[in-house]
Every structure is written in C-alpha cells, then in structure tokens.
Length: 314
Image (tube, rainbow, N blue to C red; front, side, top):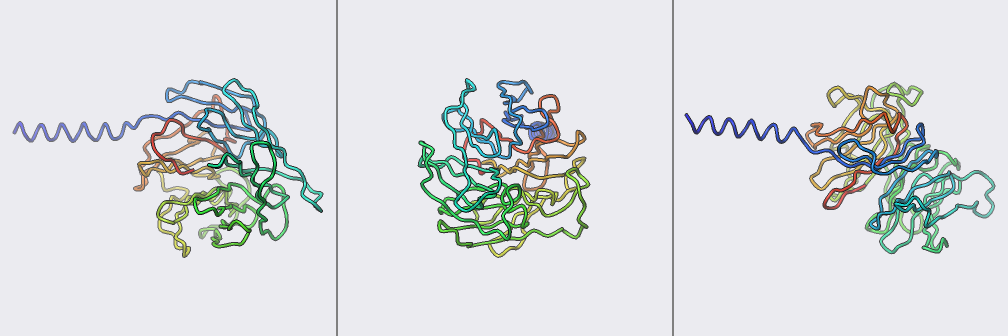
C-alpha cells in the first residue's frame, strides 16, 4: 500500500513539475509602443531602447549587442549602452529608382552581415566596413519594396531561405540566385478575408526555418498557422489557428525551435485576448506563453528568446 501511495505521489509531483515550465527572458520590439526591450522571466524590464520603426527582425549577438533596424533602409548594431556601433544603409541599385525596405538580416559566421533588400529585390552580404562583398538577385514577378521579402536566412549549405510575402511562397536560392526549392501556401480551405487581426486570412507568408531533418518550418503570416513541409512539399505537422486551447493565432511571425524540440511561435495582431508568444511541444501542448501589453502592444512582430543553452534554430 505504501508503495502504491509513493508511486501515486511521485506521478502527481512529476505532472505538476512538468506543467510548471520555467519562464523565458525575451527581447522584443513593438511598433505601436515604439519600444524595444528585454523582459526577464519575472516580467521586469532589464533594458529598453526607443525604436519607433516597424521592426521585422531582431538578433542578440554573442558579444551582447543587438542587431536590428531603426528605419526602412538601415541595419544597425546597438551596444548595451545604447550606442550604435555599426550601421549599413541600403542604396538603390543601378537602374532602380523606387523605394527600398529592409525586413530581414543576419550576422554570419565570417563576421559579414546578410541583408535582404526589398525593392532592390536582392540579398547582399556586407563586411564590417559596410562594403557589399556579395549580391544575390531574387526572382519576383514585380518589385515591391514592402512585400518582396519578409524573413530571410542563410542556410548551412550556403543557400538562402527566402519568404516572399507578395508571392505567398518560400524559396531556397543558391549563391548565384538560382531557385533550388519552392513551397507555395494555400488558403487552407478558408476564404480570403482582409485585415491584420484574428479575422484576417490570406497567404502573406512571414517566416521560415530549415530543420535538422531537412524539412522546413513555416510561419504563415496571415495564413494563421505554422506548418512543417518536406522537401517534396508534403505537410507533416501543423498548428492551425484554433488548435491550441483558448488561443487564436493571427499574423504568425517569428519561429524559434528550442534544443528540446519545442517551438516558440510569434503571434502578432492577435489582440489583447491572446498571447504574443507561445511555446508548444510537438504534441501541441502549450508549456509557456508571453503576454505583456504594458511594454508592448498588438504589433510585436519580432521577438527572441534569450538565455537558452544549446542551439536554437531561428
């Protein structure tokens, strides 16, 4: 009898411990409040920086500086003392006279910085001096400074994974600009509706990361879902708009795959009724959420989980 009670007590304790997952430290930015801040696991502000730009990408660098943008045409590196220590300013390429918008960038292992330039419809790699050392043309039907690209990442194989918002697709390009893989989103058997909130639905894709198994995890933007697709384009896993209890997905933005396999989903324009970040297991169990409408608002498009030991795919 004592053995049975011990086992029952142990199982109950295990379930409670499993449910009480620790919080995360978060670096995020919100256009509505004009704030970029680090919030610790207790919900306290550890660092903040006024940034009224519509931040679509954000990185904490190994040196403790932050890589982000403060206008549509620049990428900046900001120190903890809030000083801009590096800057790249995009210029119109030859024979182009339209606007330029930067929505994504990435500090590379060689110290250079990858920048995706919408309008110019190209990816550039920039050295620490701010000089362009490589240019990769992107294939778009019609150049659009606001919608050519959203999230872009350079892959371990040297290729580039590009989310084309205006064309509802994710493409992989090689170093010469040749498309080597492509996946096009669909409406998931729902009608297209306008707006940025939970009722808006479309195929304006936002983010994608390449998983270690070769599949691609896609944040669908106003597709209101996350899907994992194989190289052949088959969907093997998904979190749809209403799959998570008491949570509605709206404009799904950033993705982070943690070392334990859990996935952190950015949930933008979802109203105060819903969390801005959601951590789910592969079994679609919600183990952590972030909801902070004191520092941030309903336009928190980019966020980074900090302090995770091991490799985070983002």
